[in-house]
Image 1 (cartoon, one colour):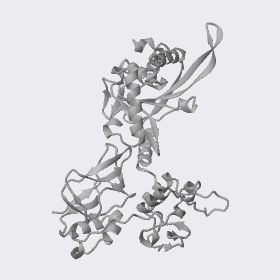
Image 2 (cartoon, one colour):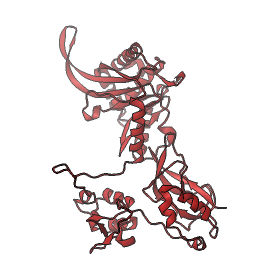
Image 3 (cartoon, rainbow, N blue to C red):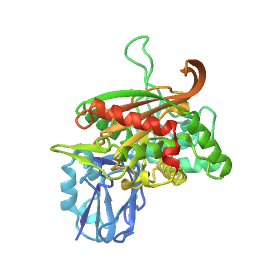
Image 4 (cartoon, rainbow, N blue to C red):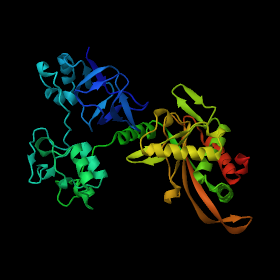
Length: 431
């Protein structure tokens, strides 16, 4: 019996997925549990496995296209099975109706064809024409699939130098792969492959519109649900970092293979401060306040197109070296979109550090349902008064964003006092 392949929920925060790559073509045999596609979720690229056996009869969502959770994106069945009923059901979904219209008649369904890639930025009613160099153009613009366009940009290839072998000369994945092997890169490729649109208003800047990634869409949705419904307030404190910097230097000199950063120490010290202030290591749960026994710290990591927060579970029970190694390993996998959902969801508190970019002070937005996040600024040498004398100290500013439903002003201030004491006297947490 033919079965539907639907867009699966591959992460807790996922609302829709983008088809990054089909691992099977129409007509290929598939086995239960076998990966058949790669899906770009809001935070990672994950494999989608087949839930039945048979032949991949029809692909309804092409590479580069998105679909909401539960939408039919393909059909698996026997090679000679009538799938007209499922095709009719899929036709009722506007996002896949074009793919269904292109499907063969039931009598010819036993002869599936390879899926074509979707053309980027081409109106449905327009007909591309083949240019003299072999690729298709529409109004002077290159007709290229989204996947091929992304591959060309990443490989520094000029799309105008690539010969298209798709329908009407459209540039598709295999054309870019062939160009990459041939080495036809040009210095101006990144600009040439992204056409700008002239504005209607005279004198206004030309522009281009690019589809937002699933990560960027999710960030937009979550920030709207945070800064509005979550009543933020902010507390800032300045910390003297000379002793911690000296402790870090001594540890690194004694153990040059580990190379601890100040942020590694900050994560550890914050975790210890949190377990001493359970009102801060908490979250609002509609009718209850949830208090956590351990400090699971989300560490903000910048990745292409967005931000992700790998979690250091039980950071209060780990040494600085172990925390450092875990941050490095998870950050690397985060940049390659290889983190599992449980590795970036469910933190009890978060830290965002922009000090390495020279930012001295900023405010961060809370990641619900957490009740707080620290914004860590740069460590800078400043003149300060100590015992009535002017001296130079390494100073760092920390701003804490608080969810006022959980953390009151005095509660947050007491937590920051403890954090400051630990940072300025690291012996508290290093023994």
